[in-house]
Image 1 (cartoon, rainbow, N blue to C red):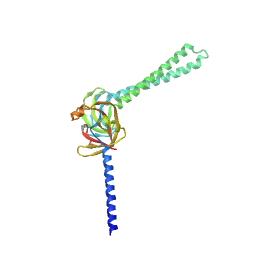
Image 2 (tube, one colour):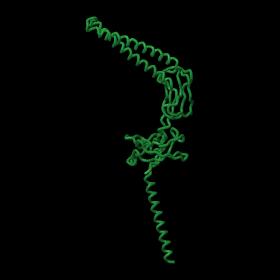
Image 3 (cartoon, rainbow, N blue to C red):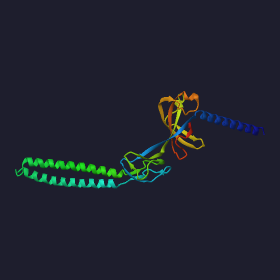
Length: 273
């Protein structure tokens, strides 16, 4: 009976020691976790046509989601198709002139040696052939420009995202570069936070992090950038003491962002050990 009691006491002691050790390890791990506060930073892009013209169609509205390569708006194509046809005709004309100049040069090159054609006439035919070649090169370049301009009448989404603003309506006459949409990109989604100088040596690119919203949603990420320059704590930090401190800006890249993260949203960042 005594042996049984001793065994029970020994087991209890071992169990208690193990629990104490685990608590110590957990506490040590928790102490190595750095808690910061920041804001979600989602990049946006202004979408515009590279050419000017009359806006024929706007296919999305504010709040709509788009995928990469989605057609978002179109210009009236008629003027660009006419320009393409005109340049195609000019190229065909230049190519025909070149073929004629090459035949003339070929005939005179054969006869110049026998004296039937003067050297001056031969040189003139050579110059005409080179001029025709240059005209073909110019017409080819203009043709390529016309093709590109026609392609640029279609405004495509450069990446997946959400339409923030729709700034133009069909029928508007747009100059080249006039914004039509503002698009919030799905990726990358970053969190902008600041770390005090005493903690700086513990913060490095690649360190794992957990981003926690006020609603309790958690996202995994990692430190992607630490600024090499110190700056004063931004004014949106609420405590007077921290406003006068020098801090370093850092960026946490969220691995799998979703619609739960919105531009400017305040979040808590835990840099994991």
